[in-house]
Image (cartoon, rainbow, N blue to C red; front, side, top):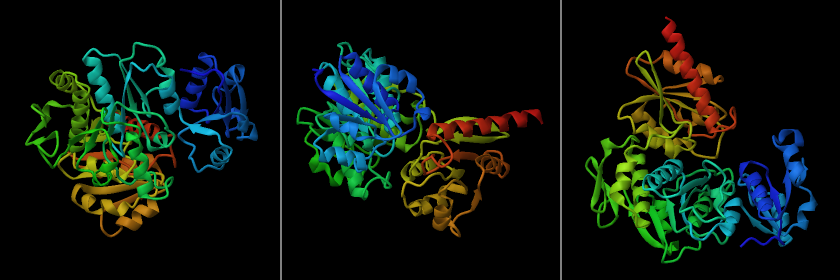
Length: 450
């Protein structure tokens, strides 16, 4: 039930903050908007000013007049303004918590987190729910913001959420009917005190669950298994290594087994062991909801790979290009390298998130013909791999892709799998992937002219 007497402040005017502000307005509430960016850098500034009280260029003490703050996932809880609010007794939440408080309680929540595989898994679950005839929305860290949907109204059967650790940091009463934790590997160590701090943030996806709820976890992830006692919900496990009765979904040769149901891996469009694990997680979710698993498996066979995740781009003179720009940490690169079954040429580098690139040395030695480095992590990657791997470095991204193509032979694969964030040269990983695809398409055009 929405309380119109509560006065909200929204900090950070990106997609989720703006959606939350308009939802508050629609429900008859009051929202004050604040962003540290100057007015000219806020795309919708004029429209926002017409509908709300706003401040741009700084977070002022005016915020202290509002008892509840909805903060952007990009603002850490350690930020001075947030710490000031906490000391003043202000309630700090995010749009996911706010959405949960106003949503129609007939809808069931499926919440998915993990260091890797979140987007593929939530999209596959959403795909299967739609195919089974259920009204499902896909929101959170993917697609549209949760508050852009009519979640307060009846009619939505399932709310499928991809949740980052940043979003989980600001939940309080939020509870998922089915919560999934796919894996925990080092990531965002530039934001958290240490790996344990990051791992505990991921475990918050199980916060407030009871024995009546379901928790889907990967039994192969040691950090998850070390913290399994924190989970109160009924557990459903999957594994690429173990089998029944230890887990409820497992590999059986070229088949994926989910209880009594099975699926041939070659029948799936999505490839690679990591996607087999994502498939298991999605199918266990369908099972946890009490829906038809045989029909869901059939639906999953038509599910395509998502953009920027081992996405096939084109073939040029017998050289195949794949875009895995979403691979912003070492574990996702590890999964990509073993997906092709032969050594490949890998383009890596970007902005640093505090990872140790040395953990990839052995697998790159096995699966990389050569590593082409471009980005702010150049020095750190050279320190990890120089003298151990064939390497080349570039200041220009286009020149890097061109060099990988020039050195390729017919039948080679060139993969963009950066192991780093994109903010050194690009707006986000999607922008990096699109630029990569544009460069490849120019190679296609130039080759056709010869």
